[in-house]
Image 1: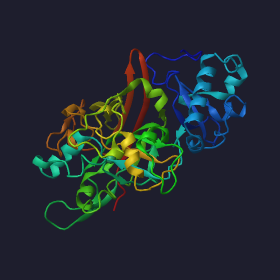
Image 2: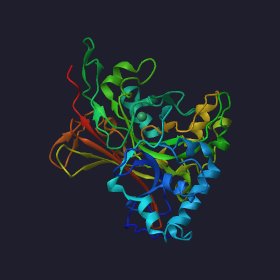
Image 3: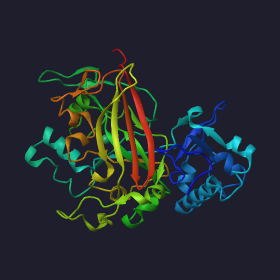
Image 4: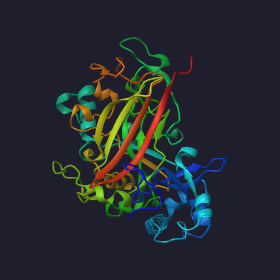
Length: 414
Ligand code: MN
């Protein structure tokens, strides 16, 4: 399928993708839902108002209503958009005035958060990441905690500080304990990124009604790239006994475009074997519940256009898949709502070049990364921009995520 809209080769957004986001058009201050195609954004609020979509979910400044509408509506909208953008349904292609009202160049619009995020959960589902962290901070012989292979470990994060790509991130001040002395207060010295992918929940389940793993897919609206900013020195001092708190609540950056499961269908693949131990019955899922999505992280130093790629990983490395995460999250009766965000946890692969955090890449700072400009990085410095990108590619088809970027500003003085 091709579009009458010109799509540059190598674009993240062919007509097979059609990710959803929320944008502010030029000369307006009203955010509205849209989809990306090539270098353009299509105004879904306007298309719907013109009667071209047969829905009533886009007259709003978030995607929550659309997320709530469920898979039949998601499929209907995707089918309608592909017909309109291919020209098979000629109503957009042959109406120049309508095209002018509904199409904008991506470079002219401002992207905002795609949803009103009620709750944010972060998992810890990469075996390689958990093993690396356990080797550094626990016991190399027993790196994984005893529960890790039996359940998808996670924690309830902070939704209020989830920000869209491009938002600058202030280095946090906080309490740390360097060495044997008393704790001190000041700027985190060990600021890190975490390479993650997150999913937005769809219709949601009522309180007390778990989502069975067989139905989990219908509750997953789509994926975004996530950078779960982490202050390692704050984390180290605070995390016993209840896990991360201020080390991770100051900012979590996400990419603006939500890529749907429909778009990613050609890239489904098997996840890792889970036979030692086998998961309990409520966590047993089909093995093709993973996706082959290439991911990379780059650091751009202050005042430079060039960047250093410090990690290349893949979503298929995740041990626990998203259906298992959602089934586990709700099995005790916890409700989810449309627009909740659930992130994977750091996605590390098996080899050094595929580790998804500076903590692992530099092994607690012991092996600094050499940058193209001759400087070194143990962790992220003020003025650095961290960029995460992702795309699934096969047989000439590329389904991209765009990117999530964030520049680090110096801490407020204390
Ligand atoms: Mn994380």
